[in-house]
Image 1 (cartoon, one colour):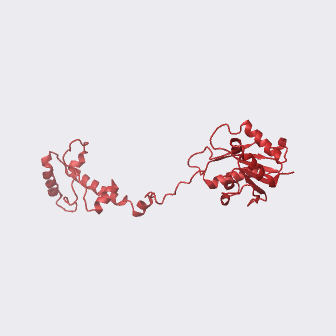
Image 2 (image 1 turned 90 degrees about the vertical axis):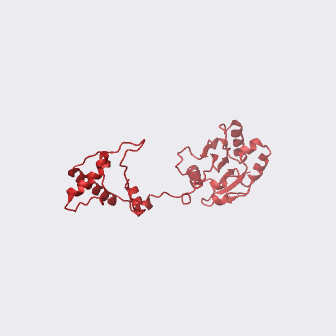
Image 3 (image 1 turned 45 degrees about the vertical axis):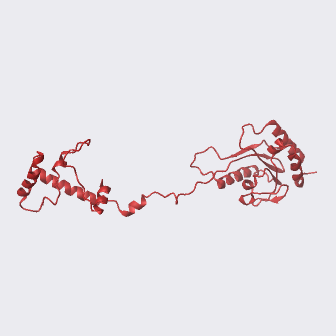
Length: 267
């Protein structure tokens, strides 16, 4: 109500009140019908009874009688209302602070990456295999047999390998939690670090074309298969090849994987 009065005052529009009942409108309080604008009645004039009688005559047609005390009470109420409007009027600074951000200044939502890995540890290697993001039965018996065969081909004892550790992103968390690419990279690094706490492996093997970004960093989005490189942070050599899931679907890929692994195969 105060804000509306201030806007109307700046536009040069005076507030008005209905003196007669309106159709389909709620009943007005009794003081509405006895409202008198301050310009019509002067409080400072000594001839108050004449002013009061003039007001009473002007309202006599409506059939409402008023006493002098009632007239003075109405004038004091009007003065209090005007003072309240001036004190409670919102400042320009408060209006600016409450203005919401426009769509142009709102931050753009960050894309959430999706991936699923299987991590296995042997005395010499950390094996990171890229898994399909869809499907419940990922680590099938055929997959486990192929993984054991790769470990044996590398010259490792399958009894010394750890069970595959599943790593998936995004987590089942609320929509307000940041699950962007930077947070996904930190999560993968923490998981890899936990596998290397006991001893540092000789080589980190990446089975999958999309692993470089999360294992090595954003600058390693594309990697050459079979090329031995050095990890940008830790003193560990890295090598990339095709995923084991692809080898299960296309048996000819096993030949490519074997050729890519030759730089780290122990004779």
